[in-house]
Length: 489
Image 1: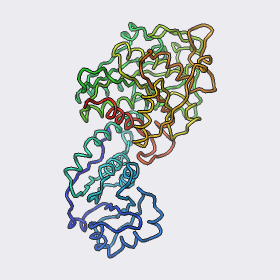
Image 2: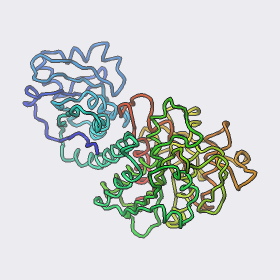
Image 3: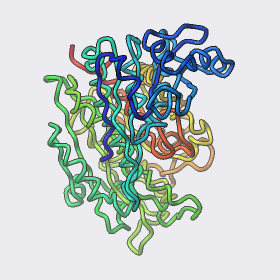
Image 4: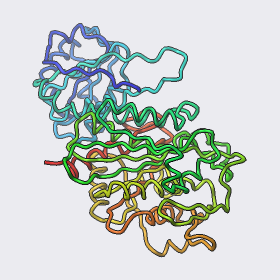
């Protein structure tokens, strides 16, 4: 997988400023004064830093943004970044400040003068996230990023505060790599193998193959993948860090490529359907994070891995399949396949693990992008307490999420003449009818939320913390939810 940039925490060494290569980052407040290290740096730069601090350009910066002074006189550094970061900066502002350093990072690395800033750990985290570069399939040598040294008044304490964030960064990178991979590389077999390799981190990983899925009665899931050469699978990952408590369950849609099947998608943009396993990718990233930071929670992550292809054996519009629950489903549109996968995995998760609560993630509908754009995931839930806790976690981590309505009136839209239900209710309210469909596979009394991440998993442009491509949205919010709600004291 893509490795996060190397970050080291060291004591302040003002003598090193003159000879430091790469870039130097220093923080200041608008209208404020330079820190002691900043004043030492300014002296070496013959007052250029103080002039920049007093300039209208710096005054106009938002918190977390910076100015770059290239090839500063008196220093060996190639650039100095003067970053507007108040001492009372928010988490998002501190991460944005770090991201500005990470985006500009080059082979010579960087020296960050954190001194005693209270948000220094978040700066380091933002730097690591934005320095991500997925270059696994480029012939040219990958971009080399030099090490980052963060100088702090108390480096040991800062390193301890940053350690769980380093685990989180690795989980996010794991998710991003999975979502960015092309489908000829990330087959269902390859995906399952990458998850199985996490056993070395302490996760229990089990792969259910097609024969076992057939014995379990997962006709909805198996129908989706029957036109593909890649075998359908369910992978179960368990992290048991919370004693005898029943687990919290995460369920992910893992369609490694979605042509739409017989209801084939338009050619334009179909290449991005490599990201239709984004829900499974987030579940995998969360499970990796929990293992790396030795979470004190019991969490089970389940992903349904399939490929939706047109073929002589492929599922047809009009087919009727039977789910593991026993309900029958009329397939109106084979491109509404993710809910079929989730239906069986949700039911299996409850039958086997009796979870205390359950959240599923899926790049499920284009309708959620129409409703919310690329800024927010859609949140659907049968439980106000769980929905509120997730929304608070997402807000705290700066990951956009918005609760969407549900209600029995929408059930009429998925009523079938021939089966217990149909798999799509048509154009109007498409993300809601998809959620209503999934709710039928949630047992009474099980707190459940469905996250439709179609708009946030692979947005069309870069974000504050990620280059263009996969964002890893959801790993931070779910990790925080688990820390806040499900970890043993």
